[in-house]
Image 1: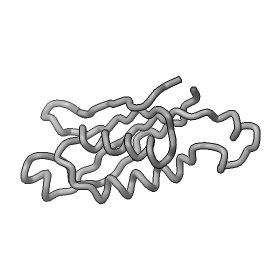
Image 2: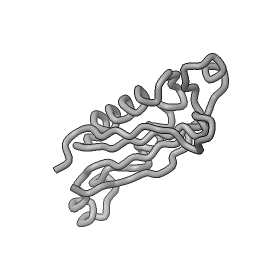
Image 3: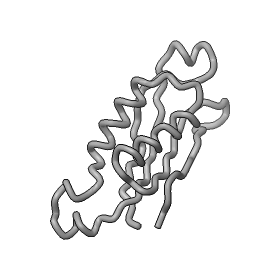
Image 4: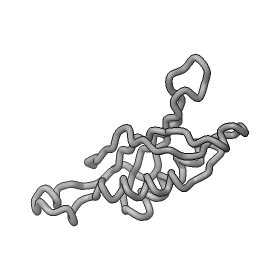
Length: 118
């Protein structure tokens, strides 16, 4: 399986369990690894034959910006569902980073893998 990846997609959103987090947008950073087979696209050199990472970027940015999750775990799970369902990727790895969420730490996050990697 080939992988198309996206790194450090930064999006302002409301996320968190504390009252102040529910009032002030924060920046989350998202990394995606999306399983696909690029052979057809490599042969045709046509965007329609591959997983369009620009379309993925637009969809995820809109989804996350409009969301109001308490947990980044829920955000990651729903992002994975979008990639698997709407973009027909058989496998996805989603990392959601919430910088500075824990005092003394530069970054906190969650990584999940869903689907089947063949």
